[in-house]
Amino acid sequence: MNASVEVAVVGAGPYGLSLAAHLDAAGISTRVFGRPMDSWRSHMPEGMLLKSDPFASNLSDARDFYTLARFSQEHSLPYNESEPVKLNTFCNYGLDFQKRCVPRLTEVHVNTIERNGDEFIISLDDGGRVSARRVVIAIGVGPFRYVPEILGGLPERFVSHSFDRRDLSVLSGARVAIIGGGSSAIDLAGLAHERGCNVTLISRRARLKFTGGGSQRSGARPWWRGLLHPPSGLGPGLRSRFSTDAPLFIHALPKKLRFEFVRRHLGPAASRVMKDKVVGRVPLLLERELIAAAVADSGVALTLSKKASSPLGGADCSVHGLLAAKHGPAPSTTTANPARPAPILLAIIGSPLTQDQTPQLYATAWRLSLEENRSVLPRRVFADDPVDRLPDQVGVAVVPCVLLDQVDQDPPQAG
Image (cartoon, rainbow, N blue to C red; front, top):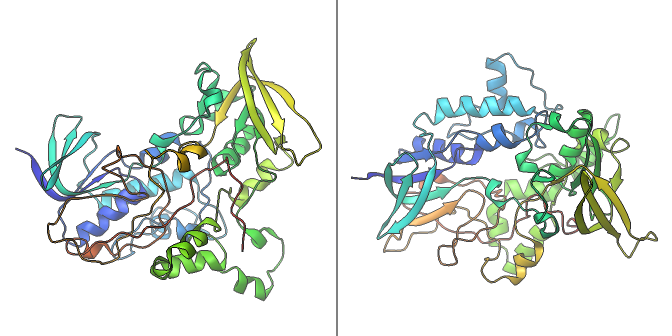
């Protein structure tokens, strides 16, 4: 006989743990499946610093009690809003949060999720089965890592994805090309360089983008800069502050305006602390297109083309290995492939359920399409969800979101 719960959360990262903590506090029968903080503990590069500010790096419980600041205080760890959060600190905080706020986590993998009438049947890798009225998918971006087709035919010893490179010390002394221009690529380039790797960053971008804006300048900030660039959980800026403080207002905008607002806001960018680790230290090949790659001698020969706007022509280079730093499908499949739905964002907003109480499948960063092969695109979610109303009222907010680590398009322009 299957154990039965109201909500099953698949995945135990920051989103899954935070949602489960709120559900538990609301008295909703919930089970969480997965290894806590797995993507962060197993797949983020050692030495990484979080891009989010410390105050914006909290997991969320119903009372906003167990913050990163409280964890740091209890464990006698340094905490400073002007200093970035270290990866190991964040991982340990997440593990402690899980023990305190989500103690009933089951550390197993989910094999399958099948709909059966008015519920979902979840099969676990230990042979167990659980039925749930609602399922939340919180598995992170790992399953959506993407390696360009040009590199797909190379032997695995020559090419890998950034998600699979936690220990960068093995690259010491090697000549490595990193393909990408977003946060993951820039982080990897800086950290690999610190570990003695002869690394080159190759990107289609004309320039690398770093968060922080005026906060990178030395000296006191003008009073007016604080008004134009107020802090928020998404970073400094009026648009970011508006997104975090009034997400439902954005949801209420006409569809065209809502899409345009998100399209022009944010985009792939690295933390400002990585600028000093990369700029002037790591060779940059910007405005380059990778057009061919082949094994040559003991490495990989890359053929690059320069964008038409540049006076320089094509170029060749040879490296020992490649790291791709992107998640999600190729840009063409985002708009041209009907099997992949348009990117949408799920937010619980308080509209009533249908009378038939159809079982609901949700995602913390994206919504799953049951009708179209459950095809998904990884997307960030920024709205605060009033999950205490989940048993009676849920709704869907449909807006486009910025693709994580998107390296194939120009960053959105401020406007």
